[in-house]
Length: 308
Image (cartoon, rainbow, N blue to C red; front, side, top):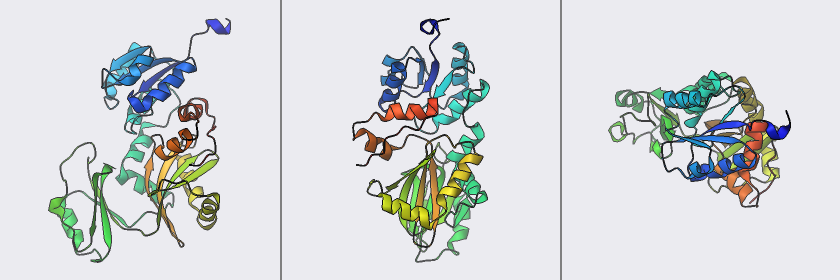
C-alpha cells in the first residue's frame, strides 16, 4: 500500500480550551485524525477536530465509552495538555488499549501530596518536616509541638494555589479558620510542613536537560547559577532516579524545589505543560506546541535553548 493510501494516525485529545488549541492545530498539521473531549460543547478546539464528545476529562467511564465508540486500538495515541487531573483519564484509556503511557497509579501518586512526599522519601529526595493531618482536631494536637516563631504551611492533598494553602506562625495556628470540607482540591487530608528556607525554584526536567527558573521572578537562571546548584547538590541524580522508577523519564516533569547553601528540598511535582518554559520559548518566536508534541508523541526532545 502506498503512503498516500495509508490511514492517518489517530489521537484522542482530552481538553480543548484556548490553551490547548495550539496543540490541536499542530496535530492536524502533522496529519493526525483528531478526536476531542471537553465538558464545554463549544470548546474552542472543537473547530479543528474530526470528532467530538461532550465529556469532562475526569469522567473516566464516559471517556472509555467514547474510545470504544472510536474503535480505539494500540496503534492510536492519547494526549492531553490540560490540567494534570486529565492524565488520570488519559492513563486509563492508554492502559485499556496498551498504548504507551505512565500508569494510573503513577499519575495518582503525582497528584496527591500525601503520596508523592512518601515516594520522595523512599528515593532519598529531601522534603520539609511533614506530617499528615486529616481533621481540625488532629491539627490542634500539633499546635503545642510547633515552634511559636517559625512559619508553617498547611496544604491540602490535591491543592492548587490558592486552594487550599495556608501559611501561619506556630503561635497563630487557627484550625477553625481552615477549610475542612471535601472537594477536588481536598479529598482526604492536609500536609503540615515547617517552612524550609532558601531560594524557591522551578525545575523543568526532561531527557538530557534541566532548566531552572526563579519561582518569584519567572526568570530562567543563568548557566553559572544552574551549574553551581548542580555542582553543590545531588538533586538531579535523585529526581532522575525517581522519574526512572516511575517510568516518567521520557516526560517533561516540573519540580518545585528550595535550595540553600547547605541543602535542598522538593515541594511539588507537576505534569501539565510548563508555563514559564512555554512563555520563554513562544516569546522568542518558536512554536512550543510543536516541540512538546515532538517529545510526547515522537520521543524527541527538540526544545530550543532560549532565554527571555
